[in-house]
Structure formats: C-alpha cells, structure tokens
Length: 166
Image (tube, rainbow, N blue to C red; front, side):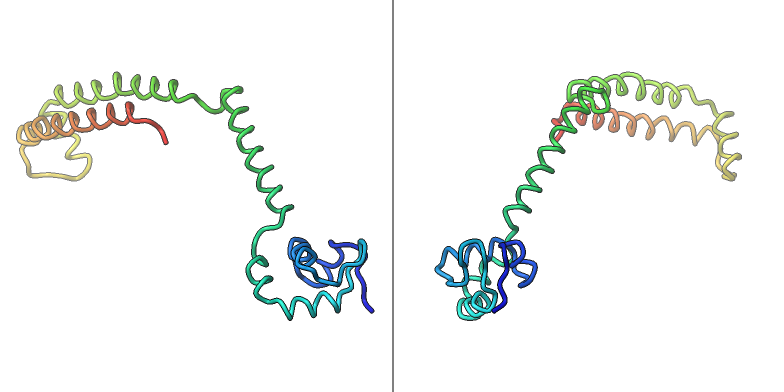
C-alpha cells in the first residue's frame, strides 16, 4: 500500500493542499496513521466526501496566508522606512508643497497673460502657423477667457491641496 511519510509529501503526491489533508483528518478520515498518510485510503475518502473538499480546496493554505501577512508587514515597514529616509513625504509636507506651488505658479501664469502684447501674440501665432487673425483680438480673447480659466485652475488647485489624500 502506498504511504506518504508526512502531510507535505502526501500533498505533493495527491495534489491536494496540506489544509485539505488536515480537514480530512479532522473529519475522521482513516488514512492517517501517526505521521503517515495511506494514500489509497485518503483518495477514497476524498471521493466519498466531495462536498467537504469542494468547500475548501481553493482556499489559501496557512502557509500561503503567512506569506501574505509577511508581505503586508514588509510593505508597511518599507513605507515607514521610506518616511524615515526621506524617499516618502508626509501628508503635511505634501500639502505645504502644493500650497507653495499654488502661491508661485498661478500668479506667474496670470502675469504672463495680463502682460501679453499684440506683437508677442502675433509672433507666437506665426510660430505655430496661425495667420489671418488680428493680434489685438487674440490678446483680448486670451485676457478674457484665459484669466477666467486661470482663476478656475487656481481654485481647483487650492481645493486639491486642501483635500485629504486617500
């Protein structure tokens, strides 16, 4: 009679995870003799009790769960270490950085739009191949629509800086 010397050997020979073998032992399977597993007896028990096996055969084993737990703990530790070595920034530092960008970036764009001259607009239009529109009309539209757009972007950016990070 074919016998495995351990649960792990029985698992390798039968293709069932160790936790299924343990379940069979808990439910009175007669294949277990000390530390050994009588494989034909185990296979017959599995055939006679498919409802028990189907409910647990795809569940992760204790070993797999231990590995996942260790991976989660390692990821958490790496995040903590990242904060300590400066490769990750704190939420407060992130919010300060966004606020700093908002204070400098949007006013600069606003100033460029407000100070645009028809000559600059004409040159930029020529550079990108747009012809035929009077530069004054382009500058006027830029000022009217551009400033409103910048105001919206500035407000959105400020709101993003205040929202909590998820």
